[in-house]
Image (cartoon, rainbow, N blue to C red; front, side, top):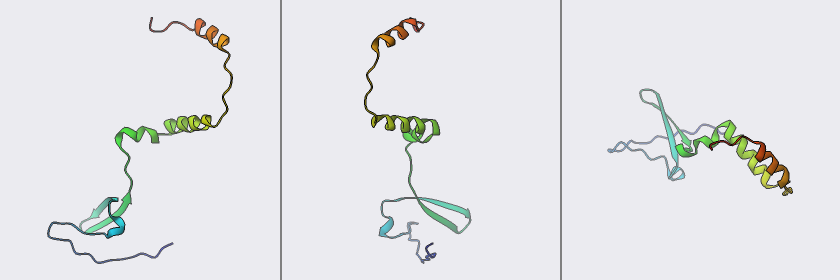
Length: 93
């Protein structure tokens, strides 16, 4: 485990503070549980439109789809498929 590192920084006139070049361009979360105490953590954000990918059901479906890519193709029995489709009730007609 790394030892805690402490630094003294000055908040500028515009209210900004520099964390250093190693954090340039990074997204951070700032927690302030009590006045004058800030906990700054680096973070990665997920766009709202991609959040569904991280739900367990969607993730499991994606895992199955990715695993299927590595499987060799199997010949389809088109006659059996046609019979199955003809027996299915016609939906939406």
